[in-house]
Image 1 (tube, one colour):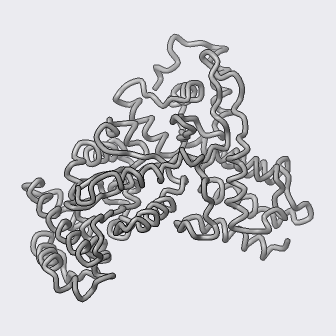
Image 2 (cartoon, helix red, strand yellow; image 1 turned 90 degrees about the horizontal axis):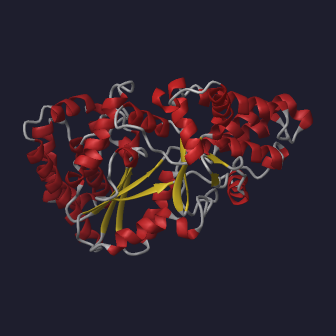
Length: 451
């Protein structure tokens, strides 16, 4: 193994930012659990259970690093196999992450996505159809986009995002505006259904959970926009004649009672540890590594670089997988990539073992970074989650927003084997154990009141 091969190994790990298709050689089937735990199969069945022409909403969520975009591609492939017409697109092709989440902005990007798909697949017919001419005329008059074309709609919306957002904020009649955009979207859906001769049209909108608003520091406003859009105004997100799958933020279900109104499926992190068995207030034993989960993480690496075992032995790869908590992006791009990046300084002792100084250094560096995502006032909440494996805030104010932020930053991880459960990131276990020891040595009346 030489330095160039190590560079190739790292390059293969960085490719995790690209969503895979299910037929890609790097795709690992069954990564997130057993067939009965497969949320994509469940969502697939939910979609097909509804009448084809109904306007249905479905939410799909999961923390960053769980592989949502890849799994949505699998949903697309399954639906295409059932003679459904699927229009899947990434919302960030039309707007940037600085855009605030509102019903109006979401509906506009969905309608633009439908138009872009129709233009790409049925160009001449679509450009002559009233579905496009009416929408294009409205974009130029009401939204005031310049030089509107179906082909250039993505770029134009991004270029003029500030003025479009201002236009939306100053709407005098949001409900009337919503109805207009829904009508345009419905016209394009009808055009697509006619041209493809498929009754069921399914729209998959990816990456909406990454929209954070102009001021990333104003998290209260961000959370409120998300709750208002996807929980309060969800009925306005419907598209006439189509089923729509929205990729929504993972903390939404923690902050709003959405599952009683919209079908919502969450993709969990890979279970590299088994669920601890509670005994009294505290767990009986430290979490035990889960062989099936570790094997799946190994397959992730094998399918990206066949010669990985010349760099890391099994013990090192398992240690890195356990340190990741089953977060795929953290595992490949931070932990394994971090070790491979330092491996040129240790060519004489490859493959590296779990107790090698380089492996331990990378884990410690990542532990420090993860600890810095927290503040001391949050430790009582983290300790409680580590004990109970429930993510329950003590109030609907600061504690709830703290819980949402910790979930959004993956300080708290979501798992599922049968029932849903939570845990703090494994890299935080030593910190919270130390906090508990200090607490027991110096007890306070109510440790959780700090949250």
